[in-house]
Image (cartoon, rainbow, N blue to C red; front, top):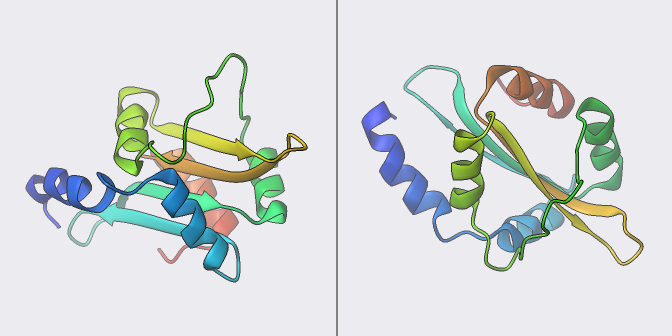
Length: 131
């Protein structure tokens, strides 16, 4: 894919896909994880979006990253799209997440978006992405 094709690809792939739909995809996977990425022609990944629902993998992520909840507003996963999470990532620091908690208050799912090399390197290591 060329740089000129990325905007249309993002809108087509992620504009209508909600975090809840992405979570359901992850839950259907044996490992409880699903990811999508975009790379430029023959280059490294430029964007990684993933959803993790496996509790052991969520625990690994919580050790690798500091997730600050603070006053963060919890979003409606039925309406929040992957495209919006990507937009927030680009406008922020190149790494963003949204987490979903169960009745007991534990994370039951987490969506991560990265556009910066260091966090992509960590995700590649933790989840053994093909290079």
